[in-house]
Image 1 (tube, helix red, strand yellow):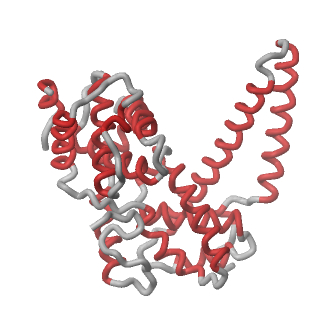
Image 2 (cartoon, one colour):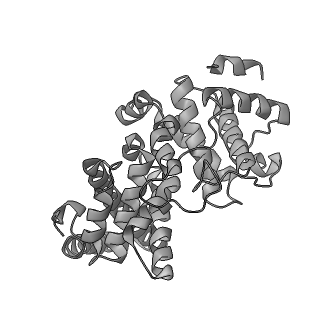
Length: 313
């Protein structure tokens, strides 16, 4: 049966409250599809070599450049769960990291019935792995993940939580869902959100999307989702605020990139002038953003195999 990120356990297209047995199972099982707490804390503290994860994700992005965003998302989920289970040497060889990344993508493609060839995943990478080597690495990953490949992710909870909003207009409902999907995809790169349950990230993404698209209805949406017994309200609001910060950081990064591109052929004094203008604009935008988009909290409530086995690949 083809794996669907939104419906990892069945072919059901809808999850509606009150919780059905299927949605209840998702909430009960979601922690089994998360990286370990130790791995997350090691990443945040810098004890785990973050460059390893970053390089592996960069390789996954390269391998998936011809495919949509959900394939690399699933592959990164496998990657984090594998690394948290196995650990990794402080200075792993580059080919090992790329092999892990390639194998995670290969497994994700097989799960989603995505047509691919091995050349698609490694043609531009400098390392070419044969099918047998990738297959051996796949079995290491499968063992480390205990064969739990039908990952429960934030996408698994979107239909469940969006039903709390009681939106009658299909285009509006679709726009809200699309914006939430964008936020979830971005959130995977933010290590702060890794310790939160997938259901919390899904609820927060929909709430943040409603804050952006339907600000007048936001207090009602917040109250509705907070009424769900599976939702930790404090974690949800913290996640919403992190998503807001993530969006602001992204907007500022885009502004810097635009300025650098437009000023690449100008004199140094002109570049300095651009940066002076940029600083003023950022300050003004921040003021406007604070006025137009209050923080989420401002709304009142009433409204077992090892890497050593790879050395002989």
